[in-house]
Length: 164
Image 1 (cartoon, rainbow, N blue to C red):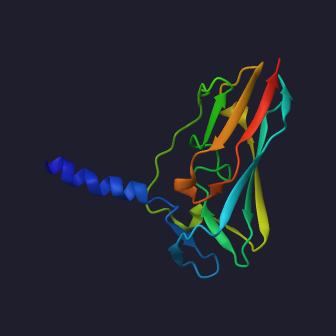
Image 2 (spheres, helix red, strand yellow):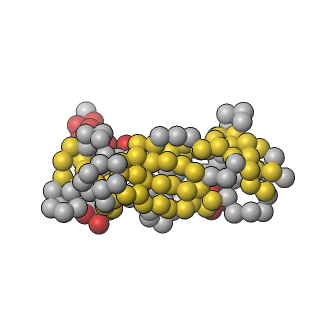
């Protein structure tokens, strides 16, 4: 019973993550994320030939009139440290992730946040071959799965065919 009492607060701390707050880059203060700020659009070529780089563009948009920030953890704005994309083939089979999985301290330090100016975007490229086992001759669907960590809302799924 004592172990359970200790574990429950630890789970709550881990679940708190970055997404529950938005850091104001001008003042350094944090506020609850109201869902009115940043969103992600995933972009990739429709057809990619085997042997070519499989480059996904991860574009963060701020349509608001004030600067907004997000936690860069579980996004391509930091070195590859987690599985923040779910990739499935046309049969619904999940593609194997072969990259690192980092553990984090909570709450995130101030340098874990990136600011996006009003009416601006930030772009990061992801080489999917660095972390996923993709096979030629298949169609793939990519979904951003880490809104709960970064605070970013994904607006789309990206699809591509990896030709032989």
